[in-house]
Each structure stands twice: as C-alpha cells, then as structure tokens.
Amino acid sequence: MKIYTKTGDKGTTSLFGGTRVPKHHIRIESYGTVDELNAHIGLIKDQEIEVHTKEILNRVQDRLFTIGSTLATEPEKASLKSGKERLRIPKISEEDIMLLEKEMDLMNDTLPEMTHFVLPGGHQSVSFCHIARCVCRRAERMATALYEISPFDEMVIKYLNRLSDYLFVLARKLSKDLNAEEIQWIPEKGK
Image (cartoon, rainbow, N blue to C red; front, side, top):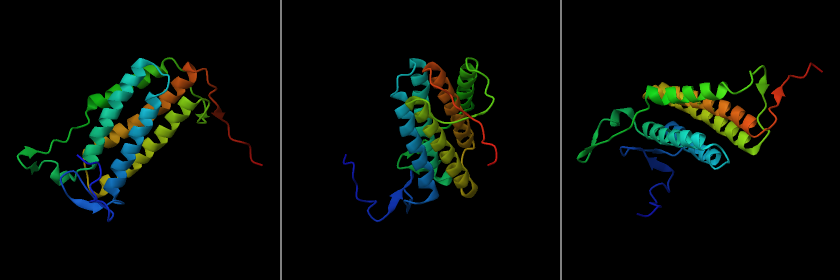
C-alpha cells in the first residue's frame, strides 16, 4: 500500500464513509487536533516516567484513536454498511472517563494542596504535559464547535474535558516526582 494517494492534491480529503470535504473543514480540524494531541501524549510517554503512567497513556492514545474515528465520521454514516461490512465506530465509555478520574484521585492524594494557579514549566517532562493539556483543550473546543453543527456521541467531549484535567494533575505529579519547582502564579500588584 502506498502512503501517498494524490487524492488530496486539490485540498480535499475523505471522511470515514467516503464523503469528500475541504481539508480546512471543522471535522478535519477536530480530528486533526486530536491526532496532534496523540503525538504529544507519545512525547510524554517517551520521558523517564513510571511504567504505570505509561500504561495509562497507552490507553489514552487508544481512546484518542477512537475519538478520531468518531470525529472523522458523519453521524448519519456511522451506521451505514460499507460493502458487506457495517462501519464499526468504537465508543468512548463511562469506564474510560472513570479511569481518568480514578488516576487523578490517586495522584492528587500524593500532592500538596493547590492554593494558586501554577505556571507551566520546571522540567521538560512537566512542560510536555502542559503542552498536551493545552492541545487537549483546543481539541475540546474544536469538538464542541463541530458538535453544534453535527452532533455525535457526547462522551467524546466529556472524555476530552477529563483528559485535560488528567494532564494537568500529571504535570503536577511529575513536578513532585522529578523534584522540579512548581512555580505559583502570584499576580503582580497594579503598577
């Protein structure tokens, strides 16, 4: 199979199910941002972090492919038959969201209470988490914009929301594990 098809040379691409749309379509922006997030998660996984965290991030990457599939499919085509097979779009489950919540609770139990906003940084691994968190928030914004014009499974938006929270808590945990300084944001008094 060749990686290049030349079918996108005029600025269009195919959705899952065959519909062609411009590459700047909100649906493409939505799943493209999820793909970008997935790459950032891979970068976090490549850091010197606990095996358990890497396993959770593997699960997250799998779920992001599920979300990408959902966003790449027009809802009315998600149940159509393609040839002899039905298009099978996996689903995000409540258990997927509960896993993130459970992991956040476990990490939070080991962290000092947060009394101020935290400035991103302190260690490269921590910064990667903050970048992924920001991309996750953008993915969430793109998904909600798409949802307004073409509704899909609401669990996708819920998962992205929870994942950005998870990435923030992971950044704080890595700060602690790596003995990195967690810099609090204390607003300057008016000048």
